[in-house]
Image 1 (cartoon, protein in one colour):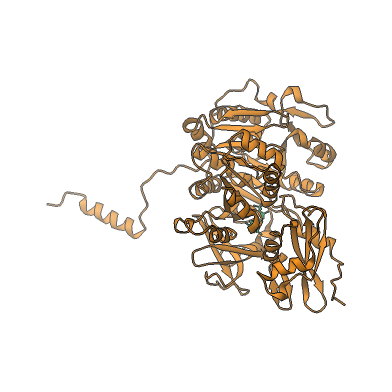
Image 2 (cartoon, protein in one colour):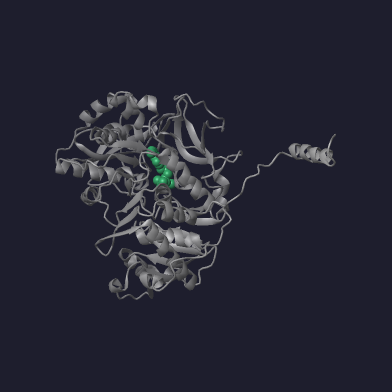
Length: 563
Ligand code: ADP
């Protein structure tokens, strides 16, 4: 016999299924402070080691960090910081900056990291645009703030990230960071965020026009940390010691300050010392396993390895990205036993989109094949979708041959620019994918190859030449320390490539020997029309070669056959 109510129950279930059936699982918001709470319990003895602006090395565990973060949260509340307020930082990689990452988002406010290498005009613009209420700064950056204070938001408060003994005299009214923590409780009743709440804000370096803000959420940040933790497993394993050479003032140091505590990795913070010799000593002294940074930093470290004729044996893994890593550099590190992972991404992507750890079947390939693959920008991380499209926006095949503009989609990609409708309107296609401005191909196995930024390609007589391709070959020449290729106007071909070289030592390479090397890899019509020497290449605020500055510097350059 059918029990009473059973028919009704069955009808309800059918209705539910027709409406689409919901899973019956708890919903806990993804929240940044939960990462550190987890680390304080599960990876409590993993360390945060910091080279301080005070000159010494400071150590604390994740358990100690969590307690100090609670004290800082009370301090922030005491300053009147409310949920949604923007708290700016102008600081190196160090434990106090890490504490701000967690305390600011922990109380529901937004941590706005400012790149100190931005121009004065840009700094003024973004502090006003973000409506920053308080600025935490390292002592190094006090002169910048003193020079600009009159033009920064009038009600801004300034906290100097040091202790009482190191507080300087200043015309700016300064609060001492350690005073803010003094006597505060070591626990905090963290409010539960909506996981879509804003947690941190980072502006693009804005090579043209004003910088644009990427506003990350708790959800995107935790997901990015989880995605990198499962993907970049060679650095992110419990017990490892990793240096974020990538600055915490730009794109959250590629998410390492979140992924490291999540996985039980110790963070070794280099502070202001990013030159080859300092990094060498820090790697050896702290027995560091891995480091993440842009190619210019690794060139400095490689020069130091060569100078000392040795390298720290503990250092076995490196992540490089931000601009194309030259093949010759990858090869040099690989031959020393340092496994190189070439990653690609951008501020708008939290930032990592692809990573270059090789799949198992390719890890047994001859080293030269592995290096060729590692010169590409790797394969997409779980959660990030890639497509390349032609000029009409039609998707192109992933066959390693077709190339077009790269578009991305995913939970860690921006859905718009902060308070900037104009830039937002131009950034997405009709299906909601974000246009990266990079020209790329993708092969059948999913390996991405960035050919160039669209604006750096050299358009020559209806064809185009990849500046990255030429730079990659030329930088392998023994008489070349570094180089860049830019487009200069040409009356017949529209644009032709100009090669700019920083020579290695006094023996400058001849154009014919460079051409001979290039001809082993590229067609004759792609050879640079001329070569110029400079003492150093100009860098952008994120440590990449500034092609914009070079293009301006060589704007009136007359190529030999340009009439
Ligand atoms: P980030 O600060 O993470 O470098 P930016 O937003 O300043 O991000 O720059 C992103 C751009 O840098 C990309 O669109 C791309 O042109 C370039 N880029 C990043 N990584 C690589 C890479 N591995 N190879 C070539 N270009 C890269």
